[in-house]
Image (tube, rainbow, N blue to C red; front, side):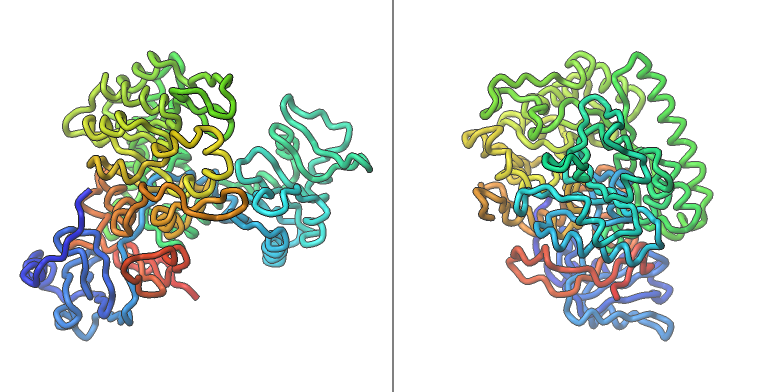
Length: 568
């Protein structure tokens, strides 16, 4: 990625002299007295900018931009706070994470009383009988004791409540939810599942493990509470509140997003992937994807808002998986797991089949994104990309997560032109909990190797993997700056050599993500001629940028010059 430099005032004149036709009309909006971080190497910092017909048309000093205003121009005086480009999440699961937007989000909260306060507040905001979903609770952050149904009964007695834990393997249910689902001591539990019971009383505790969660599926009202359209709409709104104007989505539910688009509520530019499975009908899956892409394009192009707001929705890439995760010993590793040397995870796809699938996707004109977490999994995917190079004019292929990688393969990313799509909070939430145990200290230098990726000139895209970690991009960016994790009950930094600068992290959450799409010249930075996607923060970011960036909040979010979120 390019490093940002301060250029002379001559560059301001060049910017102000370009796009003359757009400047013939007075701007509809100007923003002055701001700390503008443009993510544009030709002019990385500015005080002000102008927006005409939804696009940036001038960038410079407050005096220069103020001179462009007419009587009808809206003027925003930013009072010195920082403005950044609209943020783009490089890896999200918006439909599966939607329950956190419609329900409660307990991510990274240790205090059970705070959990209950959040659940109680949600119950007060909902009608009687409405389900409360969401969760992402982690009892190991606090006292290590699992919660009980009685806790939920106390704060939401009239609202059935079902909350997933941090990794989705456990569900915490209220008594009303259990009763509505008809679950009793005689209920048949699916293989691998378990209903936890109190060893003294024999009563259900409210915790349902693995497949036991499926016992709730037929409960009255639950399907409506899980409605994909409602979830997609609320996830979009949540993203806007957090400063997101774009997301690379892995959920594949295009009908939900199309409905939100038709209703006029799609205020997030969605670059969507679709998962393909290792079956004999791979050609049929790819044909189905192409048909889906054409269907979506035909619907989107007829929406008059697209002309005024720019690209909003596209089926863009094929998604595959080669391995699992470190926590469950299912990531593919070169060397044995440090704390379980006998673990021998099987790949989700054979090496030959992976090569075949990548080649077929390339032949059909699709860029490919492959989930690979362990260093052997990453190597296999790089081998597949090397065996089937993409066309010279094709969009970049990418590897998702890359939680462990060898030094030699870091170099191969650059040699092959493969993007590393990585999620910062995975490095801070989990290293002290289990990653060091799994890989041992000698391999830690190659875990979450963002700095090494950039130093090698590789393309680094940042995202959240929401809902497995916070959707808030400012938290994710903050994690790249300090890499703190819990070790032996104490939160402290680890492996500082792989941290990023704020400018690098911001680039990874904006232009780097835009570069993975056909929209690279339309979004991703505050640059003349691009759609005016920008975010006003609550304070000015001081240099050097510290951990406090994670505490900043969004005052307003703009998409194509239109305000799509305003804080209260």
